Amino acid sequence: MTAHRSTFASLMVWVCALVFAPMLSGCSPQIIKHGHQFRQSDIQQIQPGMSQEQVKLQLGSPATTATVNNGQAYYYISSTMTQAAFLKEKEVDRKILAVYFNPLGTVEQVAHYGMKDGKVFDYISRTTPAPGGRDDGILKQLFRNLGTRQLYGE
Image (cartoon, rainbow, N blue to C red; front, side, top):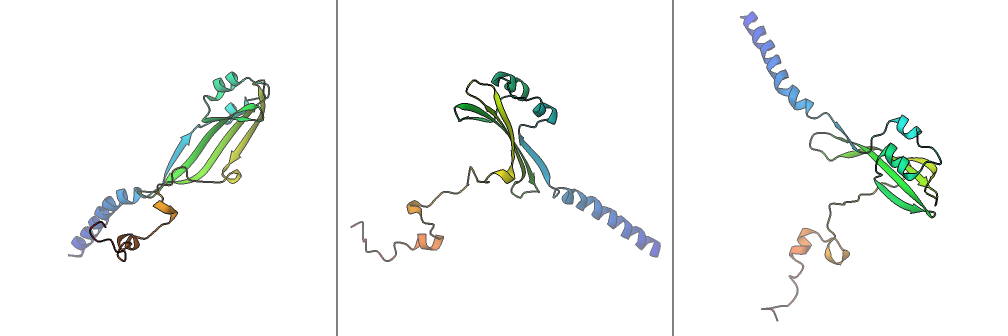
């Protein structure tokens, strides 16, 4: 009888492990990378005096460009996000490689920026502002016109 009970208990442990292991593994965070992913050797080959075309051949098209001090600037942006199960993504690292060109179109300076160097802001806030710039609660919105005297559209 005890041999049967211990066999049943060990079988239940294995069944529980097989059922809960996939569920728990779904909770482990996923690492998601966006943007340009560079090797250090690619970045080290960018030297002052290179043309814009040589930089594009080495690194690819920039994520964005800008005009800075009468010259161009190329920005290569990469970010690393983590997401656990159904939770919202969280940015854990951001790297920006900025290549500044002089007015003649040759590399003047290469700079590296990270999350500590900039202000993090949300491009898409996923919220719609309320009319009039105020954020009324649901009850206030429902009962807003209760005290007004507008009978039959007069």
